[in-house]
Amino acid sequence: MTPRIRGNDYTVLEPPALGSPWTPRLRVSVVVPAYGSQAKLDLTLAALAAQTYPADLLEVLVVDNGSAPPLRLPALRPPGTRLIVCETPGRASARNAGLAAAGGDVIHWMDSDVVPEREEVEAHMRWHHLAPYLSVTSYLRFTTAALPTPEEVAGAEDLAKLFEPADPHAWIEDLVERSQGLTRSNRPFSIHIGGASSVGVRLLERAGPMDPEMILGQDTEMGYRLSQAGAVFIPDPQARAYHLGPSMRMRDSESINRVSHALVTGRIPGYRWLRTHPARQWKVPALEVIVDTAGASYDDVRGTVDGVLAGTLTDVSVALTGPWDEVAPDRRAPLADPALDLVLLRAHYADEGRVRLVPPKPGAAAPFRLLLPAGWAPGEDTLYRLLTLARDEPLGLVGVLLSEGPDGVVAARLERTEAFARADLLVAEGEDVDDVVEEVFGTFWVDGETYGFVPAGEAGPYLSARAAYRARVEAQAEVERLTKEAERLRGQIVKWREEAGRWRKTAVEYRREIGELRRQITVLRRAQGLKGIARGLARSINQRRS
Image (tube, rainbow, N blue to C red; front, side, top):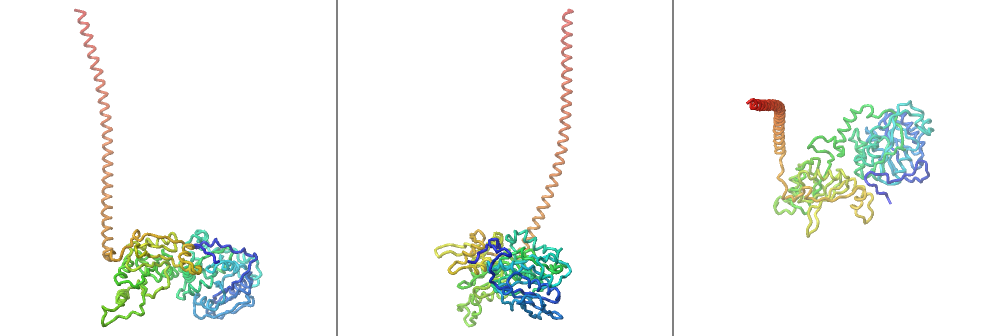
């Protein structure tokens, strides 16, 4: 039975130790795109000729991407090595040419300036024998050592003697360390690099080839599509190789980031920090809402779609499913047209860039899709809250209970694309795919009313952009007014405190004066008492004389 990996926690797998006895059966195609640098290619092929993985299960496809002079195959190379010519420039085109010619069960991308250790291919393939939905990446070290001979590479038990000192692939190793070996990463596809990664052919058939429009960042973009096809990504520190010279990013990271970020932003919703614009649309949205028009009225569908488009989540698109190719308006008696509602929907949304009219069961490109029944509208912040719940847990399915009555339950479903893609790879005959999703990602139910869903007839009215702007300006003005009032009151409080301090000082002085007066009164009282005694003695003396 194929192992069912939850999230990206591949630690449930137990690959055989390198060098231990096991029986390989899968064929691997190593695709090496190359442009010039014959000397480096010779070292790559020499290292591949010394691999511990069985030679009869290994083929190498060198793709010459228009080199001048043309590349040649050296004498020291694996037996199953072929040379293919791809005149279309670009690494994506070259890799796709190799992919089209490959016959392996696993595709191992390898750059022509990468020299693998003799156990590198075996390290990859031991994983692929455990599950058909894995992507494995080697640990690269970047060396500036003088190039050895192909014979020295093929005969080396440890390439460190030839290529150290060398620098690690720092950003990948940092990412792996921060995410507990990628088992806790929400973007594990980032480590899919063309220099030394391998992928099962079954996954590639689902994800598709590399995008030739990507002049940079094509490895990462393909990694994202592999993740949406259900892939688990494994960084294997025992799969080791040396990169001859620094990478392009090491040589000029600022320029590389400038170009690659511009290209991947629209294609990879997971890189949310790159999508800084608050309202624009992207090639691949974060969420696609699917509304089935079958049996639904124009008003119900419009109420649902308008609610979606009016929310705080702007990185969203809508797919209206229906038999659009069959819809033709009745021009003689339009009000009696049985397809009138579909005609109206097509007319209303045909020019709305965020809405697509698609056939039933459309393919999924977005990382999340919400199946929302027509006639129900989300609140202003509903979709953002729901998407945050699914992202943070992370969950493969969030069920939303909209209503329950004698006719049954009405519910919406927020589905994680990669969870259902993996479940589709694993589900057994007669098994419910939702049960597999629960096993590999998790499911959760919420109350629709709590999250702001309402019947479409009760939704709105929605603020226009102008009205929202004016409300924001008024709110900012009120905040400024209250801020000034708070400052005024703080100033008044300071004055009151200063005045209170003066009062305290005056009170102390008064207490001192009162104390002095009390002392004087005491002295006077004593003096007055002595005078009384003296008068009494005088009276007594006068009486005796008499």
